[in-house]
Length: 399
Ligand SMILES: Nc1ncnc2c1ncn2[C@@H]1O[C@H](COP(=O)(O)OP(=O)(O)O)[C@@H](O)[C@H]1O
Ligand code: SF4
Ligand SMILES: [Mg+2]
Image (tube, rainbow, N blue to C red; front, side, top):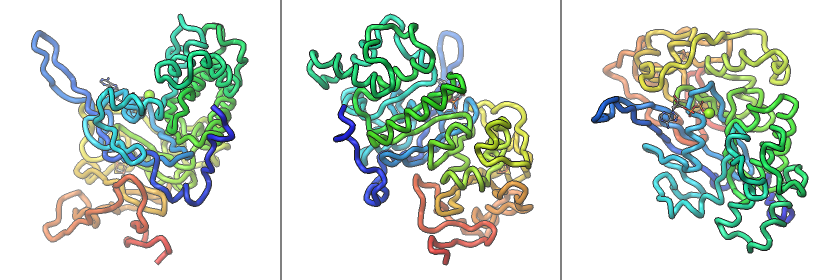
């Protein structure tokens, strides 16, 4: 890997306006639940991912945040095609890879790589680091056999490990060093997209920053697009210019970093921000008002009707059980799915979505209504959006 030649200018206007590296549309993953006994019938489905849409540009990072069980890892496993989605599109460089077979996927395996949460569990303890990092090179026939060791040592150096340690085993390294091995392995084939699934959650806080810095350096050098999964909003704050908040298989809020951290409109995002431990609170701006999150995430086998967050939402009203709030674009780069969307302490008394959906305040359909079909539930952002306080569509130029 030669950094100088592989690096592409990520920040050029052309790069920003070009087509996304990854575009996910209405992605869905339903795992069947089987009955016990001789004839195992499908008795239900785990709705792990249910209609998720987003984009990742080359050299950019999208943070995917939410509590455990929200479907973050499943989303990552679908994009890397470790799983085949039930429905939806995964457009990688403009080509839908959602339904490709094993043979068609092989070349793509080079381009989309994953870094796992548990650096120890994802490394074969019986293989040396040289084998772990070098195997993908051999499988994909990337360099002649004789050059594999040299390439492995180069990769170890890139991730800050001693290149002479290629013949050591994973247990001989610390947690942080093992995650560096996992990163070196992911970089072996010069991927364009890296799905990092809670890559620092298992590490000591003191090591977390080092690994995040390493991932950031690598991104700049190789122009890699990241989907960075975390359960903590503090971790993605410095890494990701765009953040998506997921709850029970759906994106409930997505937007530019500043919108999410300083102008969150969804009670779940606000609760996640409130829940950040005090030490990290200062790092994400600090806030005095709080929304307490109680109880666990409900089962995705039988999710609540209407808004899936309603069983834990302090603002929930009748309409929340009756009608699912659509993901609506409410700013230049900001979407939210909540009937009572508003900044903390400024949530409206009446459902702001009701006129758009053609329902009354209880969620009953109005006979003379013509609901607005396109409110911005696609994968990117449009030039117009709905201004909730003003109750009207506005254009990017403020008209
Ligand atoms: N292979 C599977 N079969 C059945 N259910 C699964 C499978 N993988 C994940 N799930 C379920 O899907 C939901 C989302 O899981 P996951 O994507 O791991 O969430 P997260 O990474 O946000 O913690 C969970 O309820 C989990 O139990
Ligand atoms: S739609 Fe209702 S239940 Fe869902 S987050 Fe908004 S207020 Fe809470
Ligand atoms: Mg996970």
